[in-house]
Each structure stands twice: as structure tokens, then as C-alpha cells.
Length: 414
Image (cartoon, one colour):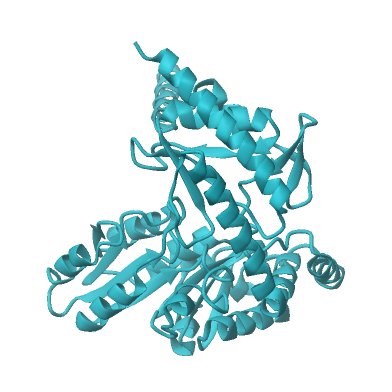
């Protein structure tokens, strides 16, 4: 009997392993391209555990603030004052005055009544969508939304919500789906501000008009847009000149702000209620003192220097795209800081990334299921910290790598 139980467990474990392995992207022998261990990092170049230094074109440090001494010193002072952890969730003794100060300044930055800081951006998106939905709620999600929103929608569905996915930035399709909801339904539209794989911008004017017409709440994740787009770096609302048009603003503290965590900003009444209903806030450890202090310091630097740093980012992004387009590569000229170089073929994307890394430029590819079949790509990010010479060197390497990978792909075909 004992042996039989052991065999059953082994069989179940084997089936779980098989299930997980089947869901992996098909990386072949190129898995080592991902999760490379960095021994030293200066924001532009990284030294990896293989001893090689590579220019980094994968970072989300858009404004080049990683390693800024003012931010580093704030984190060190917080560690000296509070230690390295908060020993609990925010509601169970883990809240620091640093957290509240950061929340108040984040709320002021995005023009909302209050904000709440969580341990990660993923937790923020996942948790809020399950907290604000239930039976009678209809959630409308863009088909290219970030995985954290997708998973949050799945959680909402288990709680009784109806979830509908509309075609990417397709307002006519969204209008059609909104019209299908019962008259008494609670309707919520959720989208990325800048879409993480394509780099394009959410159609806020179109969505806002539909939300007003259909009495729907609008929730936008500004992870890749706050600090980056808009005259004042205020994200999509700032870009379109529509302050206050979003009901809930979600954001991250691990991109333009070089720290860790996520935040949610909205009316004071709603944020106050969410503090005791969002499970990811109530039952997750608080952001570290160093993380909160670094975020607060970075936010202040962005407000002082953001315009200059955005001009450098725009210069570098434009230079990158102009060079790649001139070489005949398929690069979209989108507004956001993300530059997708579409190659289509999985092999070309993976081989191109491998060649770039071999030649001193750290680039990664995105292949299915991260992107749709036939749209595999190199996903490139330059920052304000790169020099024009850095960008030229990167372009030389990328252009040569894609051409070589394409030739090798042709040689593989029958």
C-alpha cells in the first residue's frame, strides 16, 4: 500500500513536471541567454558572471537614475534607521512613515487623492482587479495587456466577474462589448498606458469617451509611461492633456523609479477602503525601508530633472530607431520608450540575441507565448544614460547580428 502511494505521488509529480515543461518557450540550447547573473552594473554596462562586460539594452531604467548617489544615500540612511526589512504586512505593523510620505508624494505626482504602495507592480495589478470585482462586474481588458493584468482578470473571473477581451486599442470593438453588458452591470475597462511588448500608447481619448457613455470605470497601468511621456512626464493623461480622466492609476517603482514595488492611486475614499480589502496589500510583506526611501528620492529627482532626462531619452530612442530603419529593419516608430525590432521568425530572434550578446551588447528576444506567433522580436530599450556613441555601437552590433541570423535561418530551410 505504501509503495502504491509513493508511485501515485511520483506519477503526479512527473505529470506536473511535464505540464510545466510543455508551457516553456522553445528556447532549445539558448536558455542561457536569459537570467544571466550580473556581478557589477553601472546602468549602461554590466559585467556578467562569465567575466564579460556588455552594454545593456534591456533595462527599464529609462531616465538613467540607477546608481544615482542621491538615491543610493537615501536607501543607506533608511537601512541605518529602520534596518533592512519591515517584518510584516502594512496593516500588521509594517507601515513606516517613509511609506506614507512616498504615498502622499506619488498621489500628488499623478494628481490623485491618495496612493498605496505594494511589494511589486505585478502584485498591484493582480490584487486590485480581484478586489474591485465580483458577481455583476464586467471587466474589459486589451488583448495586449501585461501578464499581471491578464492574471488579475483571471482572478476576477473566479470571483464571478465576466471578463471580455477587446482587440488591441480597437475602440469600436470595445464599444461593441460594452453594449453587451446588462444595464445594471458594474463595468471596468483596464489597459496598459504604454504596452510593454509593442511600445505603443493606449487610446485614452477613445476609451474615456466610451467609459463616460457606458458608465464604466477606467483603470490604467502607467508602468512604462510615468516619468517618460507627456510634457511633464505624467504618463498618458499628460500626453493627451486629460488630467483626472482615469479612475485608478497603477504604477511601478522598478522602472523609471529605480527601486522595487508598485503603487495604486485614486480617490482618498477608494484607496482607504482598498487598504483593508486588497489581499496583496493585507497579506504581503511591506516594501523594504531601502526601497521606499530610494523611490521617494528618485521621485524628487524626476520632478527636478525629468525634462532634461526625457530629452536625452528621446534623443537616444530616435537615434536608435533611425539607424535601424535606415538599415531596412522592421522597427515601429512608437511614442513610448520601448523599441520592438520585429523579425517574425523565432530562430532569427533567438540567434540575433545570442550574436548580440557574444559581441558585447546585451539584448533579449521575445518569442511566443510572450508575443503572438509570427511576431518574434528583439526588444530594445535605450536610456537617458546612453551616449550617442553607445547607441551607434549598439546599432552596428544589432544590424550585423540580425543579418547573420537571417542568413542562417535561410540556410536551415529546406
